[in-house]
Length: 327
Image (cartoon, rainbow, N blue to C red):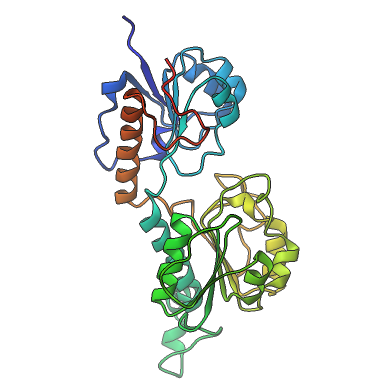
């Protein structure tokens, strides 16, 4: 009997600095470091199992893969897979929720703390010799502000959003949250669920933690940015297209907001001509909030467990409503 094939089209995005679980229990493992769009169809054609991180899997790709029985998304977000087309074929699409919460929460506050303390700019200034030339024992050219007593706005209140809210509370912040669907309130105060406009108008720091979909794409635009306080910070570790990048650039250049910390941009990897690449008061990291080594270890173990549950006849973490094994 021919052995099933387990294909990782972009295994290189997960890294090899830790021991992966053994996926060979499920079939012959084929790993590609990265896969270009024009290579996807050929590489997944004979797959029974696909485990993708960011490689897009379309309805056309699915139609060309007759042996495909299962799609695993090596992430929490699953917008890279046409889940409706997969459901029409009876193929479950399973993601990995909550693996990255500690790592992302840590990165959110890394960006917030670096921006609020001006640490990167001041380090660069010291390296230029400005401190050596200073008449005073310390100096600063822009305000440094405390988080304590400020208001944190969290857009989206899933596991990561709730984790960021709890960390903000630990810094002594008043937390506001926006959730399009009802969510249970946390057990700390002060905390309030509010509307999106109210959150943008009242918050000193705003952190985005909502999924990318038709309703949320481009939602942070000139109108919402115009509601923000002049010194407020915008943090995005979720998905780049949530923000209209040209509108954000204008707000930063005109100093209508205090700054932005981004771990994601609209098109990744970042294009040379991305309007935010050299934006003032904008800190950008290369989509690494999720990837602490402990986080990636949890991710791959959960991905392995997802397949095992599927083969046992009871798929878990299914995002497209296919709650049975496709044989």
